[in-house]
Image (tube, rainbow, N blue to C red; front, top):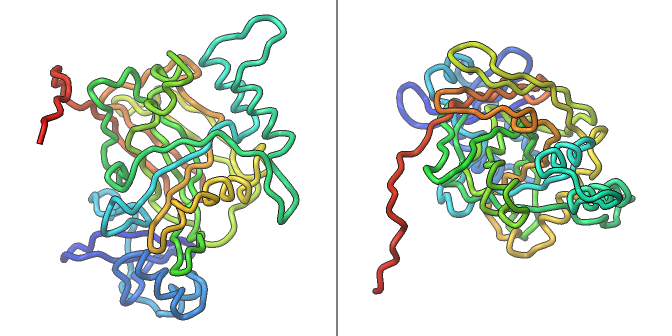
Length: 329
């Protein structure tokens, strides 16, 4: 069962529920967040709330995507209250990808990436009720950096690279009592600047402050332990690069619960009404294969278990060479 948000042809917004090949509007729902809050108030799950409202008008999601009417599967009316964050070195094979980016260490030494990866292997999947080792964590931005499926991912003029990261993201709403409530899971493109990151580990924070896209649909319920997908770059309509990617806990060095704990352990991230989109990491990058995307290329990420494919073209922001000047008030 999948949920998505879209703009309606006649104006306004709607939420679509898809089971199998058929999708329909959820009556009385203009946003996933409002639908989730109604579920909380009624004391039931999000899937039960959506299905219990009956069937509205049928929806052709493929056509809506082609017309640019599909929104991210969850958002917030105040973008400052949507948080985009993520974790790295969480997947089997991710350390090798990272090491390939940063070069080999001296003989007999481990890179910091490999040390953290090994920590995850040894302590990233604790027993229920226990906290494991904390992962690498990063901040990407707020709702202003969330890009709708099909919309362009804009690389800043000062960026040194514009690379895709095919990931699964957890989507959350903080309940009235401060409890993080998982709404579901979605495909994500955790768009990053890998040349900047490669220049110095301490520039990782800079490299992650980029837009990101997720959706088009949100999977309700549990994430499969094994997820298979593909990531590709299209240039002039032809496939420039393509690789399979694996996700789900069977292919990860951390459990989802452990990654969630180490994000939501901060009270800052448990403010009632806020929305969180948290990217769980990847081990597959075109950059690791020496590929550099350019404006006009299209990123396409798909995994059937997560719904319809996520596509976004790449654009480059214009260069305004002057540095940002801060005025005195």
